[in-house]
Length: 512
Image 1 (cartoon, rainbow, N blue to C red):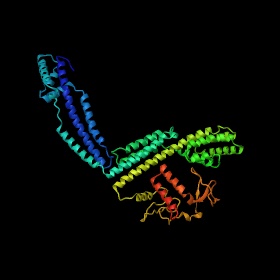
Image 2 (cartoon, rainbow, N blue to C red):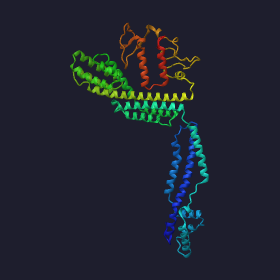
Image 3 (cartoon, rainbow, N blue to C red):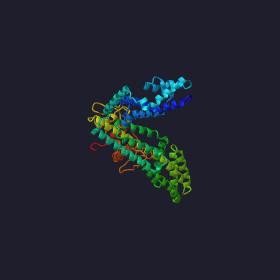
């Protein structure tokens, strides 16, 4: 502000009027911001109607115009107002015919005329109230645009989000049920002590965030499925290639330890996926070897050596620890297996992490399928879940099929099935009871290994460590294990249906 020849008093008078100028600017800018925000809301709702965007909550629609109004208010309050601009606006709004502006222009003059002009302008400015000089005026055209846009937003929001019905309430209950299941799984993940050092907290956090999203009152089936699918992708990125090697190493170790009675407790614990118990039993083998006779000690040492050889391809650290334990156990060292036990705990933690991750992904997959099925049922009540399952299983490349995947008019699949010759729901197309000797081959693996049943026949052509038994005696057990595996592991939905159909085809005629 210039201070020559009474300029200070003139500047102070203009600054006093600037408070009204800020209020007038705030009203103008806030009105424009609200109108622009409502127009953008209309465009966003149009994209929602065309399914380009998901359904938006009411808070999101209020945020844009409301936030714009707040920003406009703050900008009007903090914007610097130059004295020439204030003088020009006072003259224009008050009809002073450039009195204040001319007085400012004569600040560098000290003649009688300049002093008279400044005195006249100062007298008028001191008599003018701030809100009289800058009377707030709402822009009429902008206000009309805002009102029309608001009416369109309310109408489109009513069309996009219809009032709750019985179907929407049912879908809401489905989403809440899935949220409870996901939350319970997150609790189990956090409570598992074996997962404490394997990044389980991140996994549990993803599950809890997904459960919280499903509890959202504004959540619709499409958006819920997208949220669950996003969580699936996040868990997929947490997969580790080493976890599969860990599972293979534990399976091979269980196969070896199951051959000797003294090492069988370790195998049984591994089969039950009780890795803490397996590590404890392995640690006890050293003490048993030290106290055992020469033959039993040699058996323990040989089992450890074979376990090291079997796991070498999958986990070299575990294999080295097992080989070292074999040498020390042969010498009668009571602590020979402590290092191997620690390595087993590490590998078990990696395997448990992968198992838990697969289980979490399977739960999310199941939740996504359940929510999607509920949404489809509400839109098309006449469609049956069985027909949808048949269509999924009949798609080309789904599951373990190697045929064309085409369905004929009777609903039967024309492609060749995995291991059956023909995949069909008809028992007349394939009857496993007509196979040679009514037997199937049961390989070793990470499960309770079968023993010879009465009348069992050893197949000379079978590999060492395998047994042939009547398939009907093991079918219920294997069907139960397959069902449990599909629940606990991340398996494509089409493959799940194919496995169910496969076991159904294995049922003897008249059973089930």
